[in-house]
Length: 153
Figure 1 (cartoon, one colour):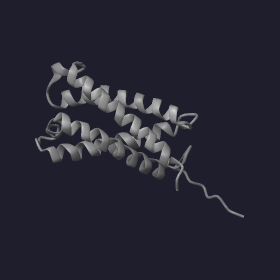
Figure 2 (cartoon, helix red, strand yellow):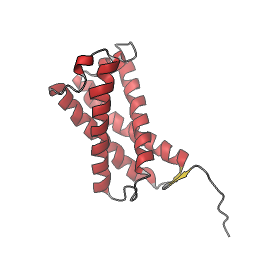
Figure 3 (cartoon, one colour):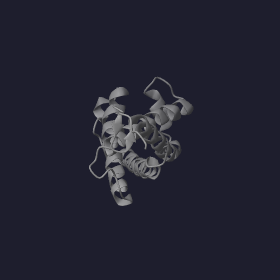
Figure 4 (cartoon, one colour):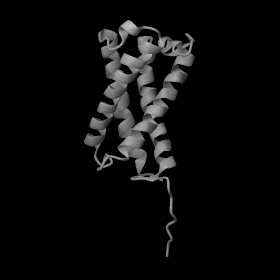
């Protein structure tokens, strides 16, 4: 007979560390897809500028670190939803919403604030709309990949 031990760091889908790890991996997958768009659009030097660099490589690394964090937080939140994203349509919808949330927080508030461009906070034009498309793609890919790997050991 198997004995189940108490684990104070469990979530709806299992071990907290496992949820965070899988969310991080999902965020890196979504970040890779979004990173291609950002590279083509020439946005990585601006990302790097948030930490005082203009390097495309530094911008990509920072972008991937942010993507990992956002993926992990998505997994933590998704794991607490009553249905825990049981279907692909639910995952895609939740991912799209998560992408929009981070577009507002990251592209419209945090980035312009950190870069000293206060007049650009919540400004929406063509560059921001392109960024919205990337953030939605990121959210959908991250959520879908998380659902794909969530129940695997």
